[in-house]
Image (cartoon, rainbow, N blue to C red):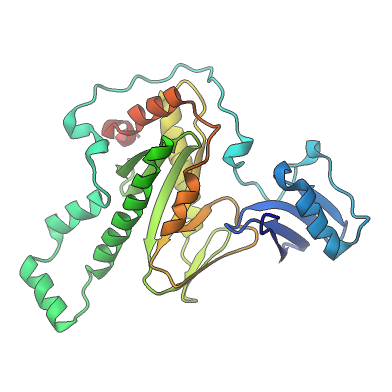
Length: 303
């Protein structure tokens, strides 16, 4: 068995049961009213059907594969195993000549935060005084974010043995940056790092809550960021580039995912190693081509 779980879901007048992997990926679902099972990942067909029939009865029918994906509510991007890289008809843009100043491969994890703290942050004496007096400051969240990006960066570096390439602090034309880009045989992952030391985190379809607080649009922002990355990369590549969003939480005490959350990959920092064995999306030469585009700063700053 694959540690699949069955989770109830009620929303928009629907009453369903979702079958999820431990990381929250939905592999199948069943409508309680019609008692019809829809398989999303064929690899888990038999196990998912067996689990759902324990709840709904042995006579529950399975929707034919041809109709999978017609579901009007769930409209997430397919998982990498469901995508196929194809040649694009339009002519790709030419990548500008790379200079040392424009090479994002030189960035360390947390590069953008390091620059911001150096330019506008407290002096060394001020930091030492705040630490000695245990006073909080407006920069505490910046330092926490920097530590989080560094810790995730170390985990991502370990994936190079699987043929993955990593970039940090990728700028966006509308301001801000993408914490990490992971490029390899399993496609591209736009990774957003969140450091919440000792917190209990719940991630839903669009929003997340930290210690039961106000909703934060972590998942929605992560999906939008992945779409942005895909648009930029496909301008310069002669093939479709599969890009997935990922949220990586650092230092949390607990992490829970909604049963329906399968559009964004949700990990704790040590769990990103699960990305290492993924393959089948980009050939070795395509990985290098995507990396050559992604490492160029001016590519990302074009509107």
